[in-house]
Image 1 (cartoon, one colour):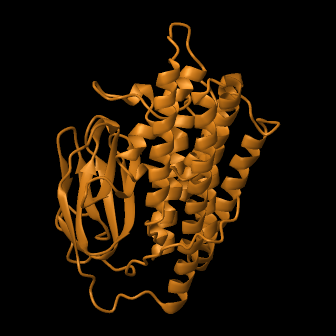
Image 2 (image 1 turned 30 degrees about the vertical axis):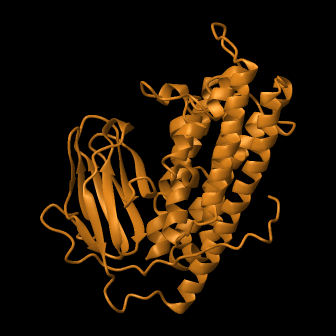
Image 3 (image 1 turned 135 degrees about the horizontal axis):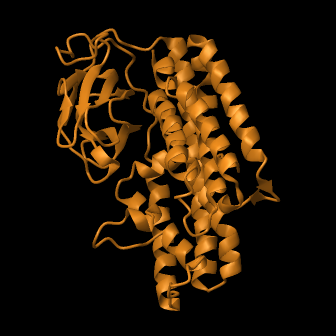
Length: 384
């Protein structure tokens, strides 16, 4: 990672953990510690539409027939405060966030598509006397400062790399563009939860063709990918079309970088982001769906793991203080997954995903699952 000493991280520490007594009713979690959520095909039932500021836990149960997701969204409905994905029918998963006073939306997405079902949610003023201790505040401050600097550095490198890639792509220098494509995308993939939090930018920069709905314009990385690794029945872009895609990618990426300069981070966002990165691996990279034309999924796979590990390592001082066993389990599983990935390195990159056997893919999937389970406990461990 290149050093960018001029990047001064902006940090907003949320108020400390608090019990949500008074926020639950007969529909709340059995242990009284969280807000019960029931997701079905046509309803997102949240046990209460308000909670005091601080640490909030949602216990999300999928009572429908399709895999679902649950989000806490900011007032604009675009910025993702926290999310939990891939909740199978009959399963319950927790989302733990630290949210200051304000207006929000909760959102269930049965079938993991569309805008979802979005009840309004309000976070009220935190009760008095809920400050974080000075020691833990210092540890959290250090963690979020480190991670904010990392995100801004990766965003800066993404801008630089996108400009270089776009110039080659627009000029029709396909060999150069194909070489740059997976390397530059790693900067995006390392901070993917941050990039995805900008709900207007993510689709135009990273939507796959299969994700598009009728009337959507196909732009961004995967539009260029299809042209560079063209299928047999595909008509190549004209020079004018390539220039349009290239210029738009640069402009949109510069806008992404600009927005990262205004971001604030909290410990829960780091921990939830680490889990989201592993979810990205499980849902897109292991399946080979992300890089459908280029088959450069292992570059993305590595970058997602990089980003998750950085967030975890920034939080290690908090975690070691609260749960040494979980810290040890995460270290062991991150190491095991990295050792597997290293087997597929070739020069400064990786094998194409199509060169892996079914057994090798299953082994990677199992390693992701083994890491995902303890990683799902990280948020609760660092904010308590």
